[in-house]
Image (cartoon, rainbow, N blue to C red):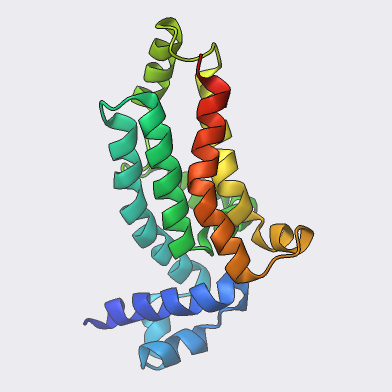
Length: 197
């Protein structure tokens, strides 16, 4: 394993346990079994390291999402696969949604760079498919963009506001993740039942 790979693995473990705010560069260096100066040689700041970890993780999710968006499967099957893939991914990287929201507010340049990435999900084919299935009478008339926004919002919000959600409904971390597993099916069923004719 290269030094950079050790750093990525260590950073992932620390961010997973502590989140972005709670993580410390010294702790990541200790976990990677290198000194802090070496860590700073590879990544000048915690923000740069987190961005690298994020882009590495995103590089695993984006092909899955694009594969779903661009497949020839029926819309309902795509909705099921998207909710399953996205929630499974964020359960593995639960610190990412909060980081994205933080960066949207504090570091718009990073968000702009991320949105220009050639691997980012492209829903063009899916949006056209929604229009087509409306015309064929398979689903109710609905704005394709609103439908896509509904799917994103229902899957992303609980993770982005994880502490709020756990506090409001008074659940533990384990109970939260059990709910998220159930949401994979719950969300797709809710959306499909709402739009099918």
